[in-house]
Structure formats: C-alpha cells, structure tokens
Image (cartoon, rainbow, N blue to C red; front, side, top):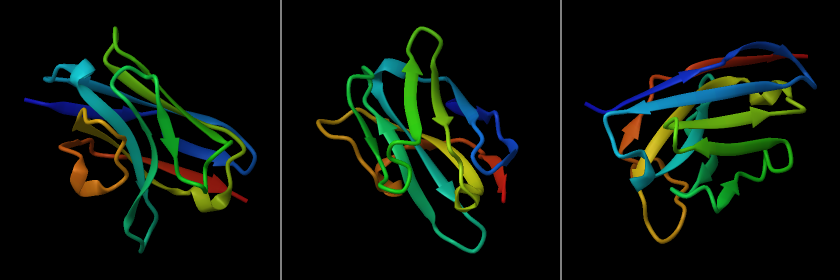
Length: 125
C-alpha cells in the first residue's frame, strides 16, 4: 500500500521560512518523479514544484520561482519543499504527489498517481 505523508506545515509570518517534508512508503521511490501541489480555500489545486526521480531536474510554478526549493533524498524516501520569503498568498493546503517517471516533468494533477493527505500552511501578514 502506497503512502505519502506530509509534515512541517504550520503558521508563519510573511517573509518567514518553512520546510515541508513528504515521506513515501510502499513504492520504489527511485521510480517516481515527485511534486508538490497546493490548494487555497475556494480554489482549485495548483502545481507548485516537481523533481525528477534522480533529483537532477526541477521545475517550479512562476509564483514560487526563486523562493521555493524542491529536493529529494532517495536513501530516505523523502521529498522536501523549502519555502522562503513566504507571502500571505502562499496560504494553502500543500500536497505531495508521486508519478511514475517519464521523459519530462509534469504539472497536471491527473498525471500523478499517488497523493498525500496534505498539510496546512498559513502565512500571516
């Protein structure tokens, strides 16, 4: 049974930093590209960042480029999202996702096979 468990969410002031982690189990982690999505209240879930199975390539949404960094540790079956210079509009539930590796990184929900339960991040102004 595949499980993705996010952690690290919480309340942070604007300009502050937060590090989210996602622990994966029940799958061959190196066979999967990983991504983070987020969903703000009343909005659809949107792409934040993705990383290839090897960690060699990353891709970011324009709204977080230069502020967020995605990374992974294949030895520990974890993927992380370092969130710096946060803004109130970063407030959302953040989801970890796993998709069987392909030749290119994907940014659409339906292209990912497994999802975590989400972790809430609230950025106060």
